[in-house]
Image (tube, rainbow, N blue to C red):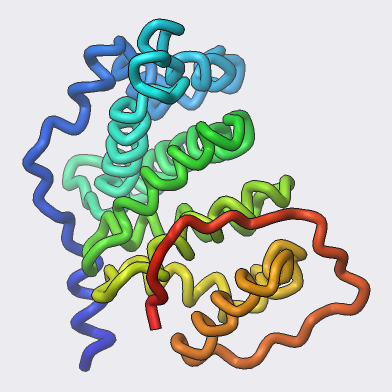
Length: 250
């Protein structure tokens, strides 16, 4: 059946032809990332220094038009995700099952630490670049797409700041309102957020911050076959979701 085929496809890693860790090595971050993924030391200064390591020098920022090293952010997101995802599908022959599970959980929790730290600590510009780096991996059915879809939904669910949820929605919606075809992973992720009641998506104020945004989301809901949302009373729209696009995805 199609569902079985999808499960098979999402267990396979895609071929990555580029040197994923090149930017990390060039900026002397790979060793620190590997060390944290391996040990997850709670007193390690790695997480608190992570944002600073992604910033460009003033002269570089002036030339690039952004304060952030975009290739480095893209490299970090994909590399960390690949390391965690690889262990999810690895079945070692020389260690016990309990040891394997413990190791896998440790690396995946460390990876989630990194992603949650970036989502929380970065300013809106940096967070937008970081979330786009994740969305870049929402492609055809494969293990990377499945992993990063779960990560994005987890960041949305666990975010304490509304701006994080708003920016996740913006990044997905900006891609959905462009011309078809849309990547499978993008559709699956957005559908999960708007359909699954645990995310309480429709009761966030940014979904109704402006008529044009509400119309875009309503069109997306109908296109994906989602049930009509039931809004909670007295939700005040106090944020503004800015979408940059020229065409409708319908």
